[in-house]
Amino acid sequence: MKIAIPTNDRISIAKRTGRAEEFAIYIIEKGEIVALDYQKNTHSHDDGTSEHHHDAHHSHEHGEHNHDELLEIFKDIDVLLVRAIGKHMRATLKKGNINYQLVKIDTISDLIENYLNS
Image (cartoon, rainbow, N blue to C red; front, side, top):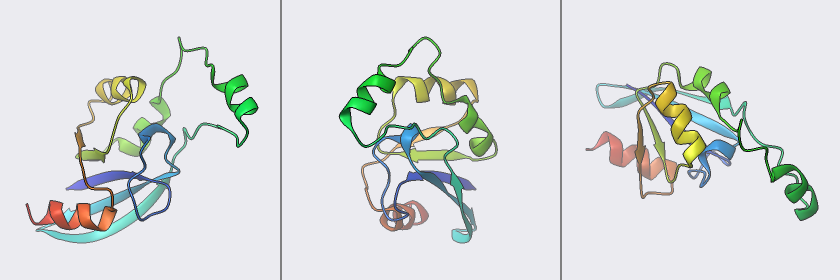
């Protein structure tokens, strides 16, 4: 099984899936983690640090907003575990036939441990 988890710090799940710095990709076989890789988010928005920059560039031309470039990262995962998911990300996952699951655990290690024990 291959699981993807959005993260900004490799410790906790990113609150905004589409803007996560990277995705932790876990490969699990027979209830054990056999590999862990981090894939840079190719879609990470340039949200800048100033509000002015943010407002000027993030008032989006929302007709074309999508996360399609993430489909390459997600192409062979079994499930994407997320805290929340926006409508544009949800549409992209549907387009790529990518399964996702909303979770309530913030810490990746706790989430993986819980997932392995379920």
